[in-house]
Image (cartoon, rainbow, N blue to C red; front, side, top):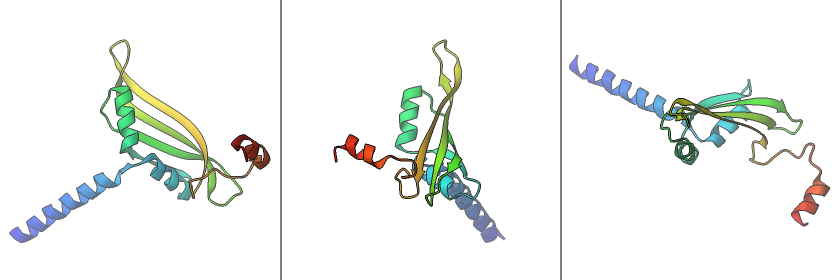
Length: 131
């Protein structure tokens, strides 16, 4: 009986630790999840350098939440236009209060990490890049 209680406690601790670790992602990982998701969406807590940079900029320590959604799927396989929303709760304001800091942006992205070639003027791009 005692052994089974310890087993249950150890299992719950492992599940809790695994669930907590599974909730933290890089923005890149969330972008890739959205590209692969049937509904074109992903969300989670941002970890690593990206979260550290936002914490430094805002002066707040609450977890940074991210939501990624697909705006448009390109004809090129695995490529979409994605909307990204990063939210840092409880950021200090100039008047001494606290508010959510939000950063919203969009980007065109393919699973291989490059932008889609659809709609791109390759001749103009070559001139800009000096080729």
